[in-house]
Image (cartoon, rainbow, N blue to C red):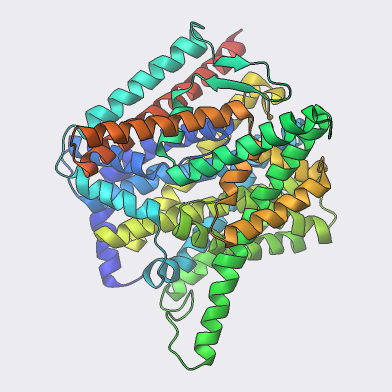
Length: 555
C-alpha cells in the first residue's frame, strides 16, 4: 500500500470534489443511520445507496470516474458503521438508569477509540481477507455491479431522490402533522404486540433483505410469540410475563450463539484446515495478514493510533491499563471475525462481538456496569468499520480502486461520522428522554437492550443457554440463526411489518417477470427506490428530532 502506483492512485482518485461531496453525504447518512438503528433495531448496509448517490452527484459536477465515485461512497458510508456501533450498545446504559454517567464526552471517547482501532485493523487485514481469500463479499460485489450498471443511465438519480422525497413527506404527515397512525391492523392477542407499522422504511428493510433471511426472521417471530407466548400461556405452561422473559432470553441467546458460530465456522475451522494443509506440505495461500502490506512508516502510524485508542480508554473511559490492552488486542481478533462474517454472508453482528469482549472483560476484571457498555461500544464500532470497509475494498478490487485511497476515504468518513453520530445521539436522548429507548418504546434499540440485559441479568438463564447453543449449531449448519433470533426477540409488529416488505418484493418480481422486463434493470430499479425510501424517512426522522431539540431549547 505504499508503492508509487498507490501514491498515484491516491492523487488521481481521492479528489477534492469527492471529499466535499463525501463529507456532506457522510453527515446525512451517519445521522440517518443512528435513527434507523435505534428505530428499526437493524442497520441495512448503505453501500449501494451511497454508491448511486456518489455517482449521481459527481456526474452533476462533471466527474465520471467510477473509482472516484467509489471512494466518495466510502467516505459517505463509513460513518454509518460508527453510528451502528454506538446505537447498538450505548442506549443500554440509559435503559439501566446510567444517564448521568454516559454523556457526550464518554460517547465521543467510545466512538474515537473504536474508530482508531477499526482503521488500524482494516489496514492490517485488507490484503489477506480481500486479495488473498475466496470470500464473496456479496454487498461489495453488488455495489461494484451497481456502479458499473449505473454508468450509462440518467434516470437512476430521479428514482433515488424521488423516492426519498415521497418517504420524507410520508414521515412529515405521520410524525409532524399527526394525520396518520404509526400502527394499524392491531389485534388484541395476549402478550403479543400485533399490528403493522405505517413505516415505508420498515417495509424497505424487508424489500432489500434477502428472501431467505426474511423467511427465517418470520419463523423466529411466529415460533417465539405465537408458539411460546400465546401457545404456552393458553396451555397453562406459564403465564404471559414469564413467557415474554423466556422469549427475550431465547432471542438474545440465538443472536449471541450466531456470533459464536461465526468464530467456529468462519474462523476456527478455516484456520485448522489451513494448518493441516501447511503441515502436510501443500502450499498455503497467502503469507500472513501483515507481510508486504504496510511500510515501516505506516506501521509506526498505525501503532500510534492503537496507542491513542488505549490512552482514550484509560484516561477518558476510566478502564484499567490491563482492560484497555485487552480491548486493543481483541479488537483485532473481532475485526477478523467481522471480515469473515461479512465476506460470507453480508451480515456484520458488530454488537455480538462487543458482547463477547464485554463478557470476557467482566469475567476477569472489576469493571463497572457503565464501563462494560464502553467496552462493548468500542468493539462494536471497530467491527462495524472493519466489516463495512472490507466490502468496500472488494468493490475497489473489482473496479480497480486504489486500496490506499479507500483507506484514507474511510478515515475521513469515520472520523467525521464519529462527531455526527455522537451529536445525533445526544439530540435524540435530549429530545425524547432516556425512557424513549427500549423494546416497547419509541426507539426499540433491540441490540442495546440485549447488551443491557447481559450487564444487569438475564430473565431466563435456561432459555438463554438453549438459544446460545442452538444459535451456534444452526449457524455452523448454514442456517442464519441471527435472523431467527431477531424474529424471536423483536416485537411481533416489527417482524410482520418487515415481512410485508418482503411480500412487496415478491409481488414486484412477479409483475416484472410477467411483463417481460429485464431482470437486471428491474432489480436495480427496485433496489434504488427501496434505498431512497429508507433514506428519506430516516433523514426526515433525524430532522424532526433536531427540530424538537431546538424548539425545547428556545422554549
